[in-house]
Length: 494
Image (cartoon, rainbow, N blue to C red; front, side, top):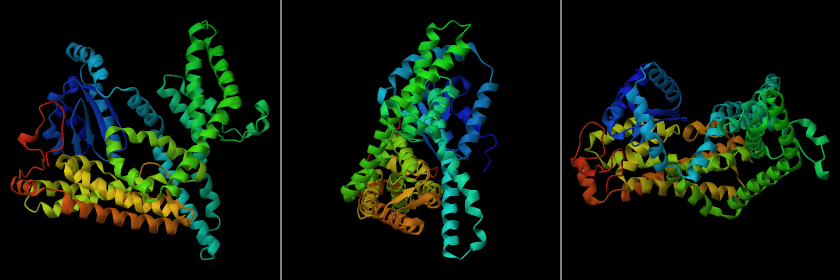
């Protein structure tokens, strides 16, 4: 699949350099803020090799998948940088930026969640790597302890630092990213966050308190770095320029560090403990209902950006328990989408375009990349998206029931789901039990998503319509279903 020139080809379909305001990316999606959504050639984007799905709008989202999205973002940035700047482009950006930014998705809640994501998302690759190494280390340790492979007894001491080193200092990276996100000096954010993990805090007894290294975890680091940002800003506002290099960082670290030791570490420690207790209590006493709600509503939360609020909770659970029990439950949403897609494939026997989209999107869905199925299949069809969420709820109920009876299954890292989650699984009964429970949950999600979609995913008229209207090009939205609002796409009527 040719992807070496994907950036320039996408730029042309996006309306050229003059129509692109900003480019950013997450693990799977390229987010491009455009000046005029009408100038974006959505059909061309959808049929470009390497593109798995497109969500049109003022912020056009292009689904590419892990790895490719990073390379393409670099290509697109390079293409933009290499394009000649023009007065027209600058004028268009200046005229549109204030009104457009203020009018669309610029609420305090969404901005706060977006900033939280910007702090934690860059840490995900390291969390994945360390999680996989930790899983491998646990497997080798168990084999050595059983006496089967005693010749590998020297390996666990080598792998332990590789798997645990990053997690022991994750607070520092959170501090750096927090300061960067909120406009402070990143290294100062890392310095004040590093205070919370320093082993010598056990000898500090502010107000008679007893502190422990890492107390408060990532929440304490985030709070300390955030305080440092605003304190640094205030000190810089009155400090003479000639003294700023010495005074600003010194006072910022000194004051923030003392506040962190006296207040923030204890406060964040209490918050972290309550979060862990709350999640444990919810799963232990909520029974099937907890997983039903979490898994059933997860995909709508992703679409609204609300899932980002769970990221600090995942990070806190991983730091405290070694794994987060929420991710395997939420992963059922992606598995149910796969089951729903198979049902759609069988029901729409005469619609070659939709079946072609499903064939290309299901492998990615099995590996936990759900956007191609969501935005390319179930969501545009409308009702199948709802039935897929129903299938996720059924499987989520099973997973939370297992937690309530004492079988906890968790993930060592944030990010992967589907089959990609297996190397990261862990739990209170060991890796083998965790893998078995998760596998059963996935089978339930596949089956429930399939059954609900097969029997309830289409009305009789809609099924007949889709089986006779076939463009052969992979498009799902027909001319009569296209919404009048420029740049927006809605689910087709059921």
